[in-house]
Amino acid sequence: MPIVGTLVGRDGPLRAVKESRKRMLLQNAIADALNSADWPFPLAECFHIPAFALSIGTIALVDLRMIGATLRREKVPKLLRDTEPWTLAGLVIVILSGAVLFLSQPQIYLENSSFYFKIGCLLVAILYNFTIHRKVAASTTASPGVTKLVAIVSLLLWAGVVFGGVFIAFV
Image (cartoon, rainbow, N blue to C red; front, side, top):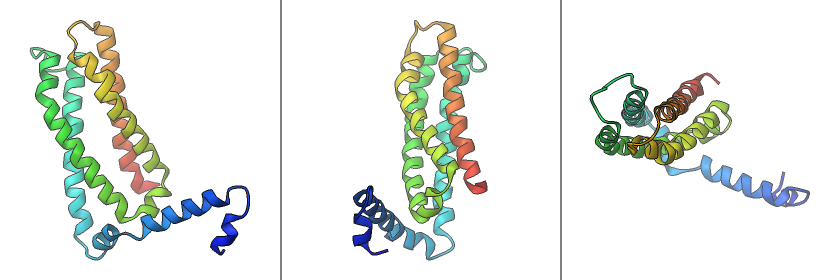
């Protein structure tokens, strides 16, 4: 359909903008570089997966301490301070490498419901981690019930991110 035809109708201008963005995503230098050889995509995965394990692992360590399941001699605020740089470094690498992986095959990801689930969980988990979770974990006055609830919600959000990522390959 010619571009003029897409401008006519109820959602014509919006559809033209969406199509333009989609073409821009599908035709990008990163996709060309990643898809021109066998090794760039797996190399990006080699950064993405360990960084994900690092960031989620440090968050889970704090969460498990908040629940009282491990490291009982450690104070939660100190553990949070000690793991925070590692968490942040892991998340930065995850987001950068994830963007590279997405740009390698955007059409596949944009048509995958598990991708949307993963990204939704990731956004909520990051927002939650750096607001409510951090405030409660850094507090010495939060009640044990609130502390455990906050940790359980955090673990569930991050588990959603992991499962969403795993199921991208199966949907």
